[in-house]
Image (cartoon, rainbow, N blue to C red; front, side, top):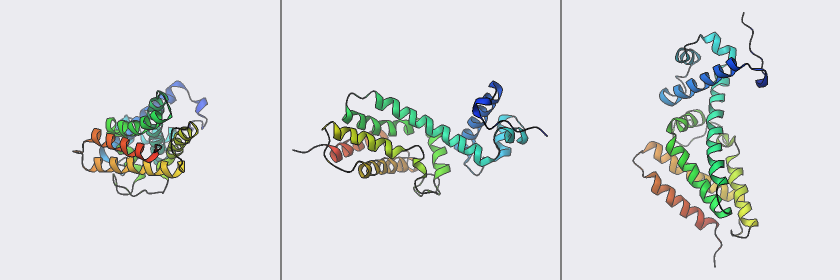
Length: 207
């Protein structure tokens, strides 16, 4: 029997790393085009041109492989948002950049969004989470809450609870994206502009 690869990522050879990357990409492709239920180990192996045993050598189960695919998508999503927020000139601009980036990434990456909805939502593109809070495995609302708190410390935002506002803004973004996925005719650029206005009205000082 072929020994299973080491569980230590640092112990992987160049070939093993490349094979794992290939399997993750094949999994993302299958989930995004055929749905999560159709992304069986056999289907993934066939798309990668490997045996099922070879897939299991690198990932011990479908759950481990699909979780690695979801983690990859969420990491790319997070990096996209972080990069754009880092370019902002001040705390208020950083919050606007966050809202714009959250919409922009999903608008440009429907393939990755399909993976997220297939794996995290019961209704495949709707709104019911399989596990409450699962969409925040990469601390999305905490990131926004930190940006809001930075704006308060800089004196440019009104007083409010950063966690509550982060959840409210995040929920608004999710609602718009959910509608867009179900109704692709929605003008997402116009919706992003409305979300920006909504956010600024919620956080700016008055008077």
